[in-house]
Length: 217
Ligand code: DX5
Ligand code: ZN
Image 1 (tube, rainbow, N blue to C red):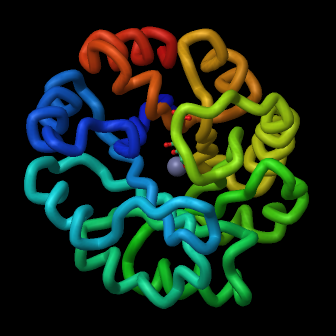
Image 2 (image 1 turned 90 degrees about the horizontal axis):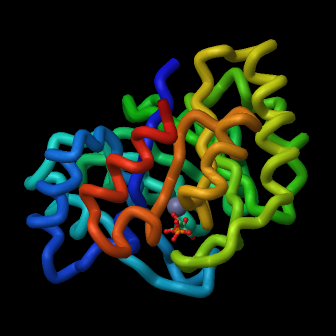
């Protein structure tokens, strides 16, 4: 399976979204990582369906929507209408996780399950068969530009082992503090979807993306 780069638009220049989206698309980016924050599950507020809908108009990229919000099942239709392709929900944010996953799939969307750095990897095992992606957070969710937490490496290894056994098509995403120096470590640990915010958007976007593509080969 080919590795995927999913640039986090949290670090994009919001005054020039359209221009920068074209730069991403021309550089060969196929996924956009869209970080939704509610100021309750995480101590920050970002954007919601209206902004995603606006970005949907300027690109055909696959929208990998990371919901850092409490009880995300309330908003599945809103994000679907906005143009989401995949909704990732947090283990820590759902009262009835099984139901939330079923509702996302019933809406015709792909479903991801995320865990915070302090959450044990074991909790995702019962869901490996039910979801399309597991997201291992490598920073405390809420802000871009934080330092990578090595605690994620062992978790990626565990998820990779379970996926090989139970769901070989599973996507394994890692998010937070990924840069040119540590991307190899997370790929070796089993990740195949790489989120990068500041490392993609600080400096020359095209150059950064092509550098990541070389490392993801
Ligand atoms: C953090 C978000 C990340 C963030 C990544 O809560 O989920 O997607 O934007 O940004 P970097 O790559 O700068 O850590
Ligand atoms: Zn994210």
